[in-house]
Image 1 (cartoon, rainbow, N blue to C red):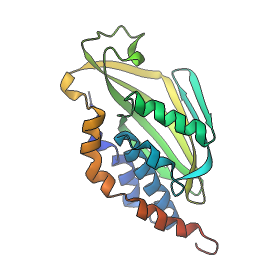
Image 2 (image 1 turned 45 degrees about the vertical axis):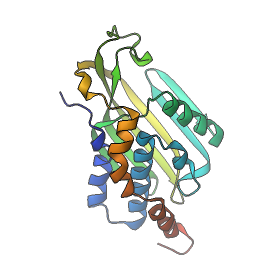
Image 3 (image 1 turned 90 degrees about the horizontal axis):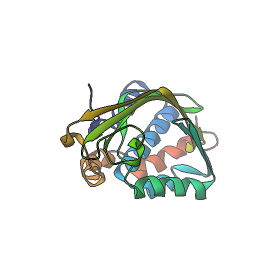
Image 4 (image 1 turned 90 degrees about the vertical axis):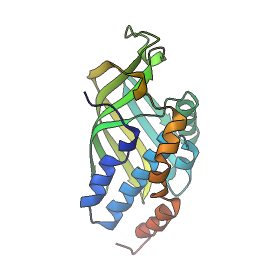
Length: 206
């Protein structure tokens, strides 16, 4: 069984960047890369700066039979604050395919998160509070963009793919560890690169 490794967070988008040449599409991929690294590192407020996201975003996240809708910046801000505040931001793909078009980013992935047995997400799974588990599931997502900035996240889980496997406790990565491990990856995706890329979307630029 493949285990989630936080170092793999940018792997899917890096593979896409290696084959995509369109400058505008590359900008969207770079935005996605920085966004993912910021989120898993816990720097959620840096996702919500004007160069990265529109002023009035829309999120629709369907998971475990429930759909969370966040309309507007205040609700999106509250969503990230809760996720990071509860230390639920260390997650990522075991397998990920990333595609891009003028519309935005498209993702198909097997996503995973490693949790202690007493985590609320495992409350109905018969987990031993003293043990460690990897939760994985398949999902597809569309991330639409407007003029080079993220408009929203529309995430759709394959609920039937939900899987829980016991793993060794050493597989668990804390938020503090994730932030340290991902620091060099994040340094490769500076905000200045995103700001420069927005010039591609100015009138008359193609």
